[in-house]
Length: 268
Image (cartoon, rainbow, N blue to C red; front, side, top):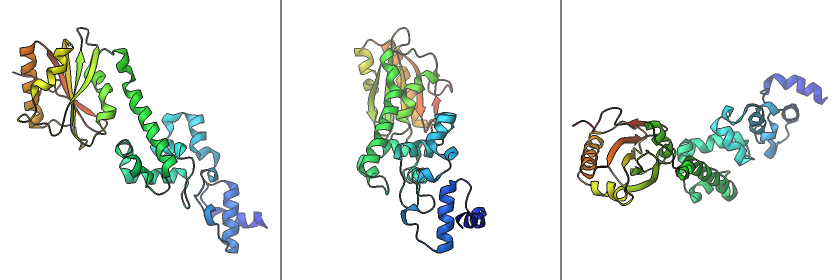
């Protein structure tokens, strides 16, 4: 009887759900029963094995998974009416994607429907591991040979900041990173920023050169006229101090602009 019911309703139920779940849905549809917490899409285990994030990761590698699928692996379970993947999609939409997960506080994340304290702490632990991984090479004194090398050190974290920050990469005579210094927070304005603060730590550490980086919270790294003015002032001060300013990077969301490459603020 059950197989007859499944055959009758088989074409009406999405194929991505497992045969067991399709049978349960068909029976409940035929007899009018209440599926309760087991309604369609509730559990990730109700997806066919080829559609489950863990199995897809094992078969194809993590790079093949969407952001929602990777997040679903951390969430593990969904809520009534949503499996873990659907819950992950909803959460990403609510917070503004991965950058939003990076910025959101623990209490805010915990308050999201279906998350709670345990899931919130797991997510924030994963975000922090990503942040530490992005900066781990700083301990190995990486050598900066291109704007991309410099961007790799700051792009992940600075691209998610909600307020403008100006940071300075201090370099030795071999262009190896001595330190990344956070020197300023707030709107970058040539009439407000003190150029001396940009070079304070460079002078103290006897740095041979610096690279300046600041972020645009809007996500658009297009340099503004103020960015050009500030760059020109910093480059001029570097010449007086005999500390070369190699570049000024403007950081946006997952992208950046090298002002030196664009010859913005570096020409006399």
